Image (cartoon, rainbow, N blue to C red):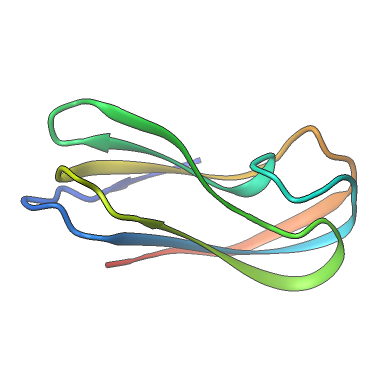
Length: 99
């Protein structure tokens, strides 16, 4: 996981992007193979489990993007590149944020 300090004064969209490659990943696309983001607002409240999924099966590098449109200013985003409850092998690269 990586915690990203955002420190917004006013709410503004934030995009978190990442890439993954897969070999024989089981099941169907869901939040268990994804770019998974938990956010903390400036007031200390949280929004858990914002996801952008990756395709299952076997594929070359695939991009996924989670766009957050907060109603209140963001303090931070905790980003996970996640694989759980699936079998197979995955690689992750190029996690980044965009405003």
